Amino acid sequence: MSARPLRVLIADDERLSRQRLEDLLARETDVELAGLTDNGLTTIEAIRELKPDLVFLDIQMPGKTGLEVVREIGVDAMPPVIFTTAYDHAVAAFDLAAIDYLVKPFDDERFEKAFHRARKMIELNQVSKLSDELRALLGGGTPAAAPKSQYLERIAVEMRGQVRVVPVKQIDYLIASGPYAELFVADKRYLIRERMQTLEERLDPTKFFRIHRSAIVRLDLIETLIRNPGGDYAVLLKGGVKLKVSRGRFERLEELMGLHIS
Image (cartoon, rainbow, N blue to C red; front, side, top):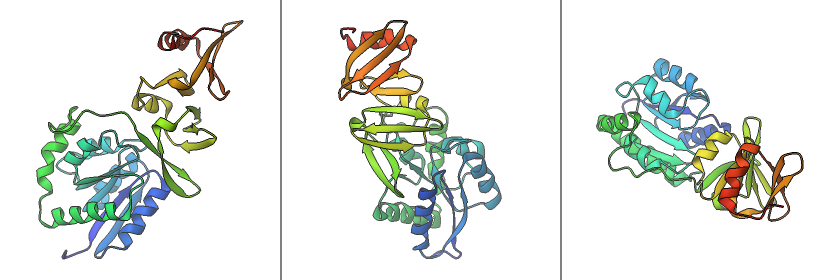
């Protein structure tokens, strides 16, 4: 048992995620919530001011990412970290550089395993041995044992106050909607807060193609490429959905598809 409560900071830009972590921590004994932050900049301030014993740190946050927060604080000054993320493409590297990681949505048992591991390492002063791995991760490479990053296989989305997982292979297309992206899966639509550029980089380019600055489609759903009079381009998807294609991306799409042009 700790001589004093374990002071924990939760850094996550999603309200539901912060609330879930807060509720789970409330079940633990000798734990004090040091603070809640929702972006990278306020997280840096909170770590420096509050000096928490442990940080649940979201990898993707506005302002600065979780790794940028660590870089700004400095490896030696950074409290022990449990990374949280909605993406599972590079968690093996984070696992080596942190006490643990949680892929959202996670269950109670997975949280308890990560938290109890963190508490034990903190109590036994074993956190310092992670510093070299964290330096390697921040230095542009990953620890030697970490595999190369993989493309997204699933995406966590919020729906009616709950978090659910959408397999990427089921996504038909994605449309930009301000700071959000809409995922279209058959007759369902999900909203996530993510930039199209980030999604384009994380989706397998052999399966998805960005046809327009505001649209990404699954290649095997494209039925026809359309060249309209006047220089307008589009794709017709299986199921009847028609989406605009930018002029600069049309030729590349032709190469990828090899379809007859209507």
